[in-house]
Image (cartoon, rainbow, N blue to C red; front, side, top):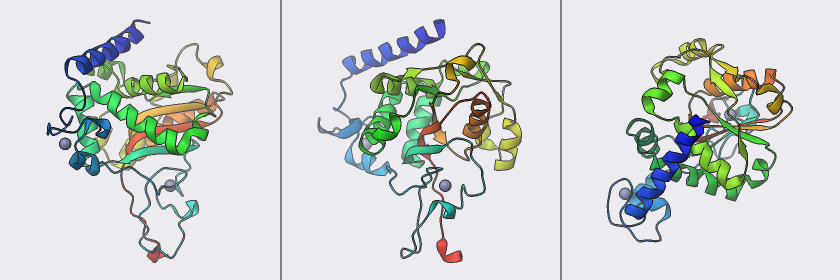
Length: 264
Ligand SMILES: [Zn+2]
Ligand SMILES: [Zn+2]
């Protein structure tokens, strides 16, 4: 319970920041003065650097860059996921992982700019509303990728949980805190794909007493970045073994994946 009070306090703090420093006076990133109608409190230059994904793989959510425009790109042709056997039903990512989205994510995670979580959530919510509103209705609960207890203590909060709390509130989907880490995994972004999978093997388990709650239910799992998909896949594995129905991985950003169908 104490855990959740902390997240409510962060949200109250974010609200206070909004009152003291009203949105839409200056760009949230570069501080340039902006018009009050600008979206997400960003100047046009920063906004345009954020690439909202449209043409994506319906399974892994990676954006296609079709170098041969006269060939249709089908899911079987997604070189990123076709041999991966992902256990979650699909991943939806909202923006491309580039300098701009990295600035937002790093600001939130490492510079404790917790108000970025609200902005990131708003971008996710807007995209769901315009493209995925039917999909979201199929889900009973929303959850998030857990941090190890040690890392969450160091950071003071779990960025994925903070984003989840805004999304849960908006769509009125109950949050369940149902997955935890078994051990303190190394920082994954420094590892190769192979080392990541090894490091993640059996890294997660279902929290005490949550199995019945999630049995046969459809779950959304939120993360800030979808990189190789191995973290989400390990979580999906323990959830599916516990009888969870559909699993939607929902992430703010994902990296570009180059699709060159001319090679085929
Ligand atoms: Zn700007
Ligand atoms: Zn794919």
